[in-house]
Length: 270
Image (cartoon, rainbow, N blue to C red):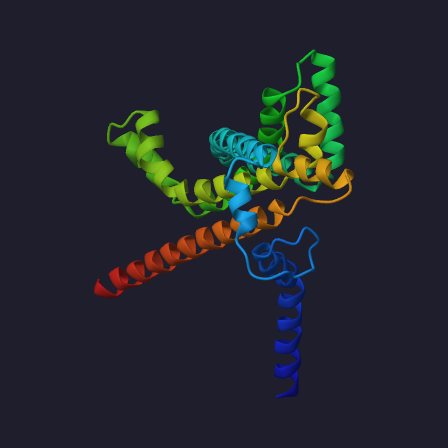
């Protein structure tokens, strides 16, 4: 009994430490005080300022962040899915070696990745901006897609692809109609993970964005903090992003539970 109480208490304490800062930010996003912690009454003025056109730099950074994240996640998902299929069809020793190499970028500190890509782009003469940031994000997102797709390939029956070829399908048709449906959930997970990592990234973006004025959410927050404090609108934006992510997770979990329930019902019906 005591062990159960302590374990639950520890879990509640851990959840409180994780979510208390987010809740504080959300609460103080509904007051017009410039200094967080100074409650001046309930107000939606910060949200109105955020969407009224007065926060041009913040909204531009949001636009840049979403554009870069969508492109990088889409390209990384395509490359990571193809790479995972190629790795899966390798021999056991070669597969282990490539998987080890694939894990290095995920374990490598972001600042090392950022500096390395910065030196590479300078050496190759690339003009830093949208292109270099997107290439950098694709670089560190692709290994996560491979990691997400590989378990689905391991669970797949290896004979169904050969069976599709024996029945007259071309390799591309077998890939599109047999393999892709099997790994679709892994690719969706990889896309969501890549999108989240791209939005959250600071170090790699900071070293590869150049000096053309390109700012994402993370780099804009850093620039504002160096000026002596964050604008109140960041509290409203943080709350909106948190609620959007929470809603997305609820929808994904609901669909996953519904799919599992339908699958169990189908098995019982048989």
